[in-house]
Length: 592
Image (tube, rainbow, N blue to C red):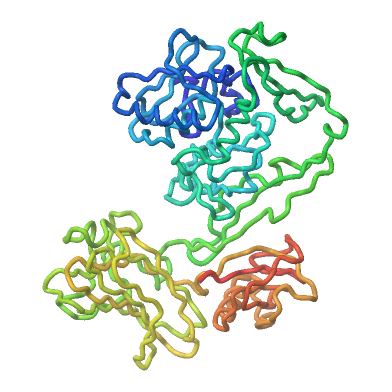
C-alpha cells in the first residue's frame, strides 16, 4: 500500500507521517492543534454496508454528546468529514486531515462493533494516541519485548513531549486507548503489564480520565466563537526555543485575527537558561534479546543487557538506577544426557512400564483415539511421539499405569521437569514418586481432574537422596470414564533444585544483606566450573528451607528464610559466572 499502512494495529498513516530515514512515525497529533476538529462539530457519513451496525456508531456518538462539547452531525456541504466504512479490521487516521479535503475513512470491520471499540477509533480520529505511547509510560507499565512479534516492536515505541501533549493529566491504566496485556504477542505471553498489577486494555467505553482529556484538548470549558486557550509550551528545542498553539473555534477565520489558513496560531518564545539546561534524568532503554545458552547440553546461563539511553542523562541529570546486565538459568532441551527422554523415536529410553494389559503407558503420534481427551500431538513439534495411558476399554475406573525410571545413584538434589496433558471431563490423577532402594515410596507431586487441552510444564525437586540409590515413578490412575487419557513428554533432569531464579549482583557489607552463612564451600571451589559451587549452595539452601541464597567470595553460601532487602547496598558488577567476589553477593530466589 505504499506509504499507507496500519501502525500500532489500528492507526492509518498519511503521507508525511512516515519518516523515511528511520521508518518511525512522527507522532505529533496532540501537540499540533491543526489536526483537531476546530469548530468542535464533526460531520460524518456512514456507508450503506454498515447499515446493520449503524446503531453502535450512534450509541458511541451519544456518549460523546453526553460527556463533552463535541457534536457529531450528518455530513452536508462540509469539506472535511469522517466516513465510516466496513473495511478489514478496526482502524482510523490520527486527527483531522486538514491538508486533504474530502472524506476521512474510519474502518469498522468484523468484530469492531462494540461501543468501546467504536469510541476508541473515533478518539483516534479526534487526535488521540494510544495511552502507552506516552513519554512517562515506563513508570506505570512494563514492556516485555521478548514476547512481541519481531516485526511489530515499533508499535510499543514511546514518544517524547515534543510530539505528545499529555495535557497535564495522569497516566490512565483504565483508558479505552490503552493496549491489552497480550497485544502483538508471538507466544501467548504478556507483552505489556501494569506495574501495579491493575487490569489494562478495556473496551467498554470512556474512563473518567478519558473524559477529562477529551474536554481539555477541545477546551470544552469555553463556549461560543473565538480563540481556544493556549496549549502548554512544548519542551525546549536544541536551539533553546519553545512553542505553543491555540486554535479558532469559528469556521470564519476573520473571527480570529492572525490565524493561519489551517485555523491555528503558533507562538514561539525563547527558553530561559534554567529551562534550556534543566537536568534530564536517564532512563533505561529496552532489554536486548537473550543470548544463547552458555552450555550446549546441560544447565547454563544466558544474559541480556540494556543501556541508560532512553533518554541519556543530560545537564547533570541522574544516571539510571538498577542493573545493566541480567542473567538467568537455561537448559538446552536435548537428550544428549542419558537420563533425559523425549520419546521422539517411539523409544521409552530407560523408563519401564508395568504389565497391566488393560491400562498402561504406550507411545503414540497425533491425537488419541477418543475425542475430547488427550493431546493433539507431542509437546515439542506436534509431529513426534509421546507416551500416554489410554482410558478406553478394557481400562476400568481406578486402574493404575506405572512408569518407572532406571535406578539412579545418590545425589544431593536434582530438578526433574516434564510436560503432561490431562484433558478430559472424567480425568483421573497423575502423581510422581521417589522410590528408594528398599522399595519405599515418597510422593513429590500430584494433579487430579481436567487440566485443559494444552501441554503443561511440571517440575519437582528430588532431595534427601544423598545416601541412597533411588528411582522415579509416574503413576496414572484412570478416572470414572473413558474421557481420561493422560500423556507425558520431554522428561529432563538437571543437577540443581527447581525454581532457583537469578536476581543479580549486589554489594554487601559487614551488616549482611543475607544474614545466615549456610555453608562455606571455599575448599571445594572448582575454578574451571563455578556452577558447581552455585549448585551445591542451592541444594543446601533448598534442603534447609531458605527462600533466598547467594554466593559470595567465590564460595561462601549465604541465605535468608524470609524476604530480605538483598539489594540494600546497591547493585554491583563485581560478579563472575553466577558468583560474587569479595563482599559481593550474586543473589538467587526460590520461586516454588
